[in-house]
Amino acid sequence: MEHHPASAWLAETASAAERQGPGMLRIVLVVMILGCALTAWFLLRGYRRKDD
Image (cartoon, rainbow, N blue to C red; front, top):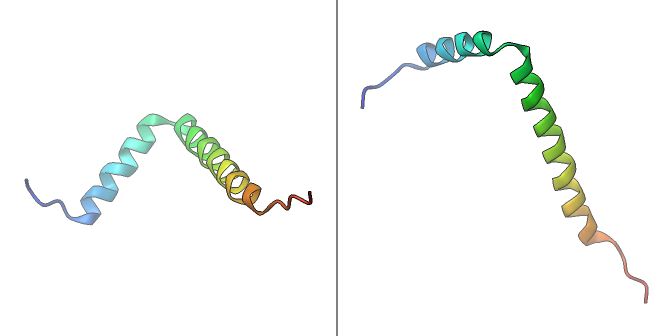
């Protein structure tokens, strides 16, 4: 396996992002926001008090 410098990897990633267009960024952002919301809900539901 050959070694690729970080600058080459970043340049390759940037060119791939340009080919994908803005739609891919929107998908990533929506998935990230939904994931954060679900994680917060899951963690915070354990702190709910049950006054029985």
